[in-house]
Length: 232
Length: 284
Image 1 (cartoon, rainbow over the protein chains, first blue to last red):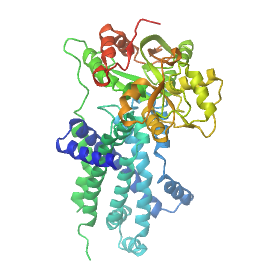
Image 2 (image 1 turned 90 degrees about the horizontal axis):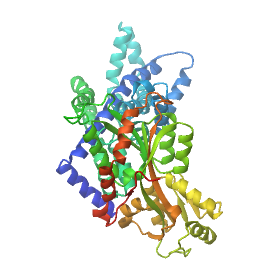
Image 3 (image 1 turned 90 degrees about the vertical axis):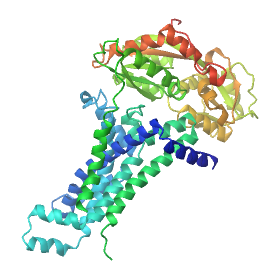
Image 4 (image 1 turned 30 degrees about the horizontal axis):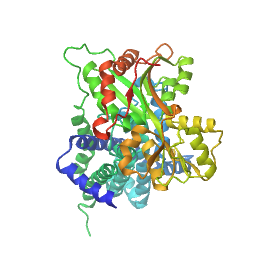
């Protein structure tokens, strides 16, 4: 319990005096996980929508794969992405291993199925008569999708929050493909692991608390959007 | 609503753009910038956890204009990275395993940098009565005979390799409820041993670093077999094209430079009253 209190104290102190190292890794955490979430939305929302609206053979198989993907173990994703990006791997020439971009890729792979799965459920939950009515009114395919997204916007924001949560909280993949390099790929989760292994439990706790605060603030902003304009 | 939603989505991209200004420090004015300025160093967790690299790497970067990416993993993983050509330079502590890479031609230019030593630590009550023994293998044998709890790293690190070699010399195949593998780094393993009142083998540096947070004391030390020797080696560019051999050699030169060696020998004296590493470049 002592360590938690010391961690809380140290977290406040680090925030108040804007510790440069902590500010730097906090901003990087936000950049990496934010960009990964954005990519996962660009991939996941259309995929989820296509699966919700489309009728094609093997659809159930794809849906089951997406749903399984919502629980992808980050460490397995990390290993796979690392195998691809290592110099000896097929994409080694790109020189992406141990860069923030490698972490964005890994986190996007983790978050995309979560976004797709929640989007799929969100679109499917809409009243099917809306769909028919829109087509009856002569809406094009594109217009239909835009209206459906607008109608499902609160659930889609929930998808974004779930995706962001998956990205910012994972550590195994970030460690493997990022390498936890100081000044380059160190983020809040990997820094927490490092400080724990160094035995600096209070600092590790402080970093963990800052991570929680960051996740809370981002989710709060999205929740505010989600709940704004709510009627009744 | 639609506009604010768009703003929120764009935010991370903007941040990325804003943050991209944090490039590594440029080379010193006098030095010519190296043609390939990034070096990938695969090393053990002990060099990072002890804080030594935090001191040496920035100094090297400032002096030469290189940027070092430090990947701190177990020695086993670091050697594997060298064998695949996924690193440029290795700083590790498992001489027997290193020699295999030298023989297979995966690394060249292997040089001794420094040493410290391993110590056997355990609870002050010392249930197996090994305190003061000078034969590390005999001490392990006694721990096995009394079935006193022992925590092994179990991660193929340099420390784990040393531990396995000592068990072999003791003629013991460690197994059973008393022998547990943590599968984690030295710091975490020491913490587990401390919590469980168990014995473990550790490098002295990490132990000294964490001593205040542990209920563990040094019980066996001074056996020649407990020497922990660190070597630096360059991944062979002939065998692994793409390796930054020039940068790797510059880093190896830096570590074995008399000035750096002095810094290594001083490191930790102010905090622990004794150095964490003993420089010994040029010896074999």
